[in-house]
Length: 222
Length: 259
Image 1: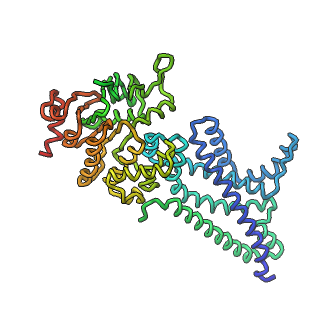
Image 2 (image 1 turned 60 degrees about the horizontal axis):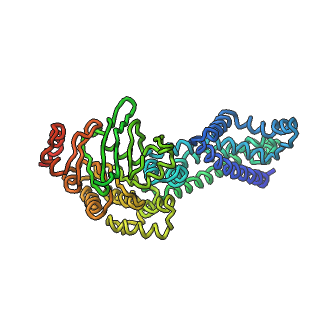
Image 3 (image 1 turned 120 degrees about the vertical axis):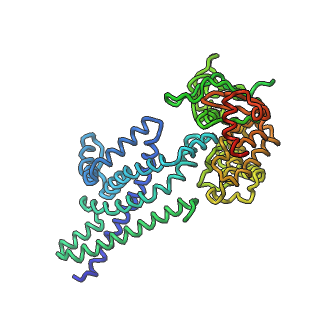
């Protein structure tokens, strides 16, 4: 088998990896803002919920979260009489998104708290409501600060998708494993996917860099 | 005399063990221009921050335009103010900050239109027109589309003044508006404040180190030291024949280098 013949199945796997990455990133971003803002809420219920979510998903292994959603949740569902059997893609996206969202929430919280107090006082003097202050004053200034750590998290998330091959999802790592089992050509297969992951990470990082440029367009440029 | 627009009644403000305002009594008449001078730590900026509802008080009562500022009247008694009451009271006040505090992510125009649109519910069109008039007033109509970092400190502070005026306050608070400026930029900001003082019936409260300007622009000057108002009077009297030894000492120290 020539190495070029590996490419079609690997590309198929890569496409699954891309989809997993994009979906879980969108979910993770939504959760980051919801829990990051929620953690600063004066409402103790919202604050408590955010803290519990963040601590649970930062404090446990992604692999365990994935297995729990895929293998344990259906059994819990059986016990209470609800069908909680998730398709592998959903379980994968949920686990990845929930996990990365917990880390992202701390980035959002930290960046919001780094907005100078004087800006918030000025918003108060101009009689903005708390919500208006958040959306119009604090978040736009916090966004550029979030982007470098977000870039790290996005690349981390891409690499973490390899874990979903363990619940038999046909991603890049899964396809590579199949080919290797069939051909025993470890060097070629792993070298190819090394570069494929690297290429995807480059694209992702430059996407976030573009985003950073866009959200900081009001800043002075050196 | 008419009903004062601002009245501090035995107001106490503490930061932990430190007493910043010590049973302060202080009144301002509608339309009056009052300067507050004094050494740092005298509590003069705190007076403005309390009025802008940025700092709560521990004791006493403050009345603004006939209403208690930090309290609400309920069943004939004064209870601590709710956020809704504070929002209502804030409409009366505008503040200009020492460090300008423009919103760095908004253009000059948006800095001025954002609050009128979001808070007062003004239409975009109306807010824009009003902002352009105010920019005209502060001499920056040609800078409307710039971002704050593209302006000098003096220009930024003039935008800060326009932004506060856009909310149509009855009372303007100036917290050391020129202290963060390079000396050559102080004049342009004082010119704008002076113009406001002479041409408008706004009530103005100015905390400043610019003694000459305070003398020129104010109806009354108050000297604060250690959380108390040591002396107040018309500028000509206070600057030339201060009654209190502490005032003389302070004026001597700050005026000496200028002679």
